[in-house]
Image (cartoon, rainbow, N blue to C red):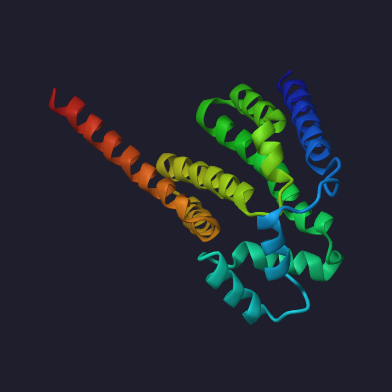
Length: 203
């Protein structure tokens, strides 16, 4: 019986992921590049050196070049086109749908994870940023993964989960400065949990 339920859940999840792929890759190169995307294309040009890409990103974007290095690599492998540049974000969007499923399942069970994935899959803002040659969708992805491994670390005390939490949080910080809110909020949660537990013990 449980095997049938698991197969059914896997079928639903695959359907959500498949729909996420369609929604994010459909007409991916249809619209012209806008200003910020043009910056991405210039900075990720495979014809310039990696050090030049880093210099341009630091000077123009004032942030880490990790995302731009990834776009540059894709452009070197698959062609220097807006579709290829945007496909990096589209892939990040699809992976983040699965990531939110894992987080929902970790917190509240499979059903909640499935609902979270389905809502993320069809969310217009999520689709929009998954089709843009900018790194914002990776902020969503790495923040979600950071929280996933944060919860797993608190529950199991696993060193592997703690390491994964550190890596994903660091990657989020390399995508956008606003990612600093992720570890800050996690520290607040730890403090609230600690003091509430201490308060209950004193009572």
